[in-house]
Amino acid sequence: MLFLTTRVEHTAEQIFKIKQLRQLVEKCDELRVGTEDTLLTKFLHYTHWDTIKAYQAIHAYYEFKRRHPTWVARHPIEHYRQLFYGTHCRYVMPHVDRNGRVLVVFKTVDGFQDYPDYLQSLVEIDDLIFESLLLLPRVQENGITVICDLQGTTRNFLRQFSPSFMKVVNEKNGVLPFSQRIVHIIQRGFLMHITSTLFMPFMNKEFKERIFTHDGRHLSKLREMVGYDCLPAEYGGPAENVLDTNLIFNHLSQNAKYLEKLQEYEKL
Image (cartoon, rainbow, N blue to C red; front, side, top):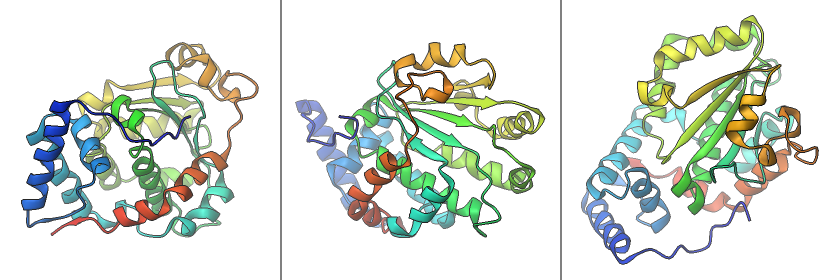
């Protein structure tokens, strides 16, 4: 099952590192976070089980949250229901890609007229999605693949993409604890090309190397890299692979209690 969250059997060395990291976090007066295995192991996987680097990564993540409190989810899951079902712009696929990574699809859907704080809301639901996926052992271990479909980009989006906004996007990319994150950008037309061009200068070198662009009319490269079986039908996958908002929102709802608890974690 895609959303399998059963207890993982760790090696003796991994158990030792989890305990070691837990002790470091518990002794830190600045961190007001939990020390449950799920939180600790996502940072340990991210740093290839280097305890000190994992501890530093926790600090970096919650320092980002302290300095940019509006760049993380701040409301109960139900608060975002209307946005998910009103825009249908965020999805997760039921099958992993050819490298065992969970496949996520983000679409640019112009909802600025219906949602006054639309971009802010998108920032928050993306944070929720990432945190919810990092609950999954397979995501902690293998990372995720993201398809960013920019074909719905409008000038309303371009007006929001200021240099300061882009810098914070890059900063958050630098602290998200995914062991791997591969991004495929689908673009077609002048506006979409501008969008990806705006983002790229602010991405660090390592992240840029994991970004691949595709012309919306020719997706053979995408199918080859991601795998036919997991792709949505509209990108050349099997006909039964229909994008379904229910899959991601049900996952969020089932983990609502913990995800809302995570929102309280902080660094002083």
